[in-house]
Image (cartoon, rainbow, N blue to C red):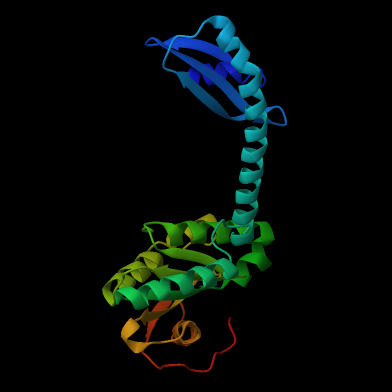
Length: 262
């Protein structure tokens, strides 16, 4: 049937009547703007005469025309929704979408009692790449980091570019051990990103790194989303103050003053 539809796609207004297993099938493609986007597949259990089936064809083609428009509009709405939620450069969630989805995850936690982990991540020494190699090179680094962050992601995890060189990860149903493993994986795989950016081991340029703040979200603490975000952000700055390219856990209630990023 798929082959038949592909053949009909050359003529978006064409229909085809077929007999399969003693049943009569009418295949009518749906289209919009001259492009096939679906099909109506009608089956008659009895064997009608060809004139009877031919008389049905204009009706189905009229229905198909309207369905084709509806499918195109639905696809366009889905595209606009995706674009409104996605960071254009990296394809990750944008800040607005991440915050909205995180709110839903925390509400789910409150119902199930399961823990999750939030990672706030800042790309160390990113300005050096932009200043030395240009913004196109900087964009490639951001995309490479996005690929690293999403590697090994599970259903329920969230990954976002919050803006500039700041990222966030939500690990669903994760523990401190899972968060530690994820942070170590990220830090242990920066060599390829540095090499791709032109920063080799022997380079005098400061190497790219990740400062990671980790906050465990425990429903028992009844912590507001803003407090969780602040804890992860504060832990990230502690990692920077501790030498960069490392991770730091935030304890419940820990919120410290931020420092200027370098």
